[in-house]
Length: 312
Image 1: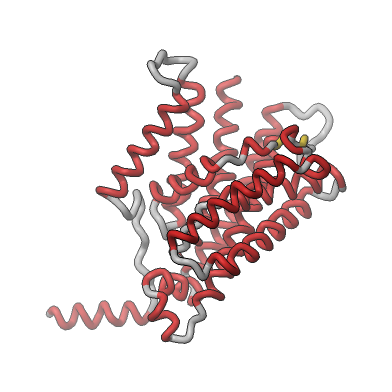
Image 2: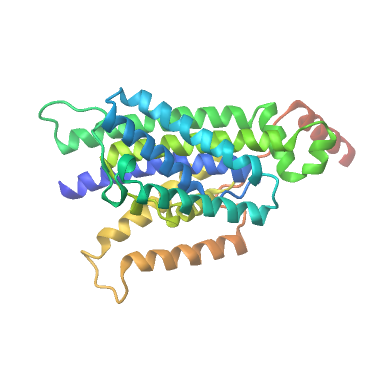
């Protein structure tokens, strides 16, 4: 029974981090933004949700919406100076933002309770609710949000807006020559990606029912990056696959020590294997397990037909 409940726990974590990974895929995979501070917006969403649920008692869905809005607002403020920097400096700035926010909530006793953390009431609860029932309710809530996010991203990235993002990723100068304001588009993507990371943070807080600053270390950002790189940048299905594989491996390493005697701590071993896996993929399959799908438009179809005729 315990192993079954833990399996449900893994399913919930896959759904939560798949949402965060989709948000990073929009920024990096489709737009080329190296956001190494994803944990900052994940933290902002989690703490916004937790504080609102603890102090106001508003419905959980309103708290989730507010978590998204607060994270989007922080993302917009960060994007204003950061997006005018080169890619390497953008990565450094966003990484620093994550640590700054974590230190702020760590020292803020009056609102965030500092290192003591915040106890979060469950979103949906009734008298006599078992642990198994609570897991099932969370699976339904998390995967409902995940399906909505996935459909939205699929439609957006296949739309003319998504084609502009790909154009900016491939050649910013060419995109600007066609009248596309790259800073405006990047700021919009940064806001949207931050909002979705905030949603993931809110779902994480309501599922864990307790958060503290030590749950939002930079390793969270790197784990999400591994999901995107393994699954395949600019492929939403690939990101879902990457999230599933990484969480299965990460959570599985926590129980393997109960069954196997290893000369090294399983948690440290998983970090080593993650690094080896990323190096291997970047060297031999940089497009990830599922590569980016070619755009399907009438113009591209016309070019392909013309090429086929020319080859004949």
